[in-house]
Amino acid sequence: MTREQVVKSVVSYLNLQGEPVTAKSVDSVVVATLEVIESAMAQGQSIELRGFGRFSGRYVRARTYAHPRRSDIQVTVPSHLQPRFVPSRKLRDRINSQPRHS
Image (cartoon, rainbow, N blue to C red; front, side, top):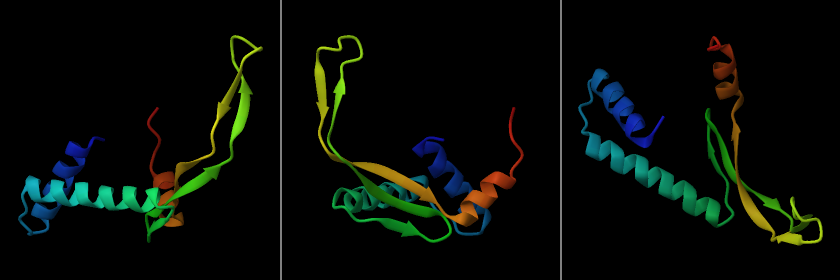
């Protein structure tokens, strides 16, 4: 699902709930939410959305690998934070209760 599709879904949902909103206002909220999550993760913070999940950064230590085609070359990957998402139990249960598409 793309950001545009998310915005359209939220607009439809809110309009059905009797709260008229525009796609532009919903898009600005979606963009702002993602920006806040990104900046918090960039600062090493984790973000927990109860009932949905937790966004965090996972520290990956520096490593040296052999080049896949030339074993005489060593490739060094520096240490870094890797984005991570851990779904809540509620979200996992909801996803796993849905029928699978084959």
